[in-house]
Length: 473
Image 1: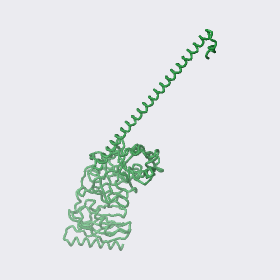
Image 2: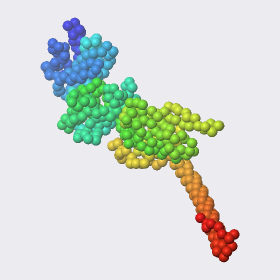
Image 3: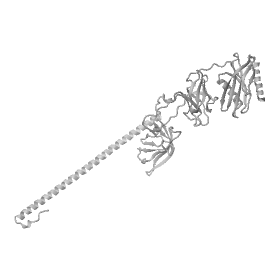
Image 4: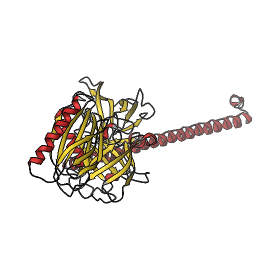
């Protein structure tokens, strides 16, 4: 009771100050009820009912009591603020009272602090409004909340965090999703506001706030079109009403890569090919790998991996991968030695291009590009950079030189084959001729032997017994 009496004296002194200014309809006293909250304001014209506005934050509760209009004159109202935390200062109590009054559309001329309570006890004071009449209600279009809103980030979040209100794929109505938030309590792309409905034609929108729609809390989106700000009243802690969101441009959504964007055949800029596999299957270890083929120098050992232990950094849809990268160096003696290092592989799914940290070479692939995100659907294609043009020219020159070398090797090989075939043909012809000559010689000798035998037989029949001999077998 003693603290409340002191508060009453403070309020009375504030009212006396208004009275000293010569204004009509001065406030004489403030009537309290048993719970300590202001119930009505008593003026020279009698007791005037008052409307209570309350706002809760993680740090405490603030209440302001504003009397109905009194002949359109300037009036004073009372406020109370309760702290749940020990680090809430008296100045913060006063500022929260001002913020709540301005949030409800009142123009505040000054705020005084008459009592600064301890944690759990109310701080109390008065507030002088510039106009007795409540400001005309603001009107907004039904889609005025759409777009991106930002505020400063906290903890592990980015410097600026955003809520982007838009109709997402598969959603029947616009929803609010996060950008720049850490993994807790929310991550990028988490839907935190849904079922958004305008209250009449006002700048207040009823909604459900929370990442789990079935247990989401009722909340309100309150827009100030003059200041281009948004407040979220109620809902999770991230939406406390003393945090103001301002209009901004939505940050581009980070690119995502599916399995088909990673596990495939990639052509390296020097002509080599790699095949990445196992990243999706072995994402929890030991990771994917990539075999290398068609090395331009020809001395890469067959069946050896270029990348091992490939895994995504940043989630199942990340376009950044960690791996162990291998190279083979030729020594002075001519042998090759395998060397390994940690590296990062970065994929651009739209350009179908992959780069390897620590290497000037890059990889490209065929196939349709990954569909663009809604924010990038209207993006204008950009011209290739000077670096890309130089890399393309170098690749074209390398491919032309490779093609020329391969054609020369083919012609030389064709000549070698033709020479070998001609030599084999000549050898065959010679062997055939030698065989025919041998047959002819044998036949000649056989004829001579037959003729000699026939002559001897004729002489034997004529009586020359010396010529008689057995017939040849």
